[in-house]
Length: 344
Length: 133
Image 1 (cartoon, chains in turn red, green):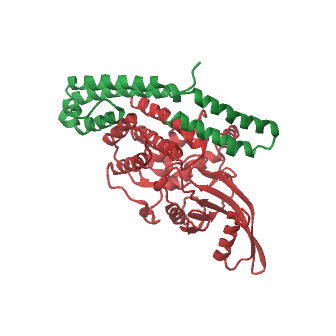
Image 2 (cartoon, rainbow over the protein chains, first blue to last red):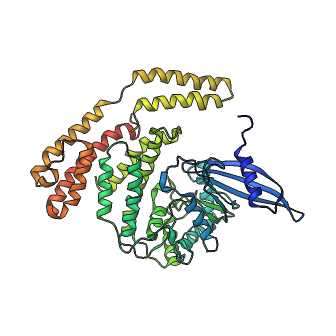
Image 3 (cartoon, one colour):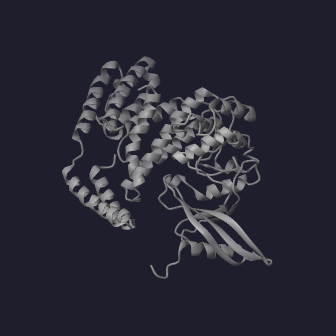
């Protein structure tokens, strides 16, 4: 519509208010990198003069589209606070600059962070698999992959001020809280009874494992959620599912077949024995394979919750994205995986 | 699963309002619009598969008839007619009553429930599973 300001123009105005010392500020190389299932992501450069010197810096903006997969469970403000809290830790993360709750500015809450140099290559494409396979052969990236995960799990999360995201009680509380979280999403999304899912949930509740040591857990640690430059992880991204919980939850995700689709390498980049050896060495933890089996089924429940939410958003008319409609057929597939894991 | 009529409507709308207008080349653009037109006709020829719902209902009724005979009377009583909603309730009750039922009765009842769940799942997988020759 004539006269309507673009999101790029609005963000230009916004940055001018946030960077009062910047003269002649303009934005360039504006790209929407993902029409996310949860968030819209924009990458751009700001160019300005300051104290007579020309400056240029890359930024990344995450915006809540209002119909994200995680619905009310997703909090951009929490993500911003988490990234901010991680800034001065060993965990590689972008710098977080500004969070805006006001949906009036660009149509939804958003935050702006540093654009970290490197690529978060998608591992699902043929080119992506080749990229990671070649990096694995060179040998540097697999170790960086393990080290970045170890840096998360070795983090003193209380000292970093991350306890605001919720701290489980001792014993089985972490698993039970996680189940309750995904049950909530299922309850918001479910359009008809799913008795297979009920059985999976009841089994999970009845068999929750005790946690050996609470750690800061990413919740979706895999290639694609890691920015890589020169075979080194420069940032762990996609801070949407993090919890204080069992580090085996992340380990399970790494060990899962779900994240390597035909590649012999975990997360398409690291050999299983290499990962196990160096993860245990760097964290001092012993991988609990029985707990991993449990969390594998919990991930299947979580995935079912994601697909139910996605197809529900479509069925409710809150999204017209056919990718969400397609997930209606993914629900029985993931429930079938869970059923097989439980022996039926 | 999302009802088939709803999916047809949305796929047709996406072809007509999102995909076709974005295509510059005349031939693929015409193909996209024509795909929408043909899908409108197909939508009138296609119905939901009732055999899947019937198969599920048979499995549910067989389970609900059998459970009282294995000692799970308490969990089944007053639960209502065989349906997927009531099966969800039954599963929750069996786990809640596990101690009072005893491990043997619970295990037997849970095995029967899981056999039924497998039958329900197999019906859904006739649509959602891998394509068959």
